[in-house]
Image 1: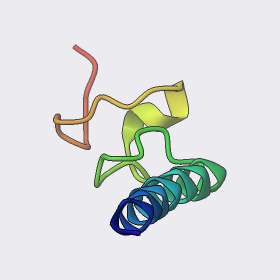
Image 2: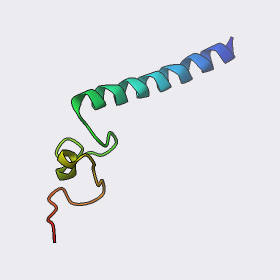
Image 3: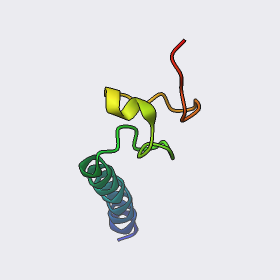
Length: 59
């Protein structure tokens, strides 16, 4: 019985994570884990360079 509960909890956690990723992808987030994914300048170019400044300039 304990094994069933453990498996059910793991499946709920994994299912919740997958549902969150699908929801964010439908919103248009390129980098789901990035806190700036919705406003990233690279998003319009098809990618996100997470970990850098949001306002990037070309040199």
